[in-house]
Image (cartoon, helix red, strand yellow):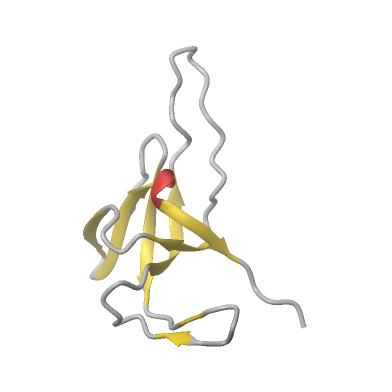
Length: 99
């Protein structure tokens, strides 16, 4: 089944990856207050403004993101746990370290 998010929503596959702080401390994902990470599977076209134009989405398909623990709605797509959330629920885009 394919799902296309509407407006500024994203379909995200929740991933279980430990987070590392800039100081090198590893935060396990089972920590009660740790944010979630995920891979953007699909992105909506952007929010429609009153002017009839759409906002440009910053996040795109294939981005690995960090988002608030309780943000969005859990859904099951093809047997996999996913989450639908608004772009504003995203805390940041994870970028690979150089070197």
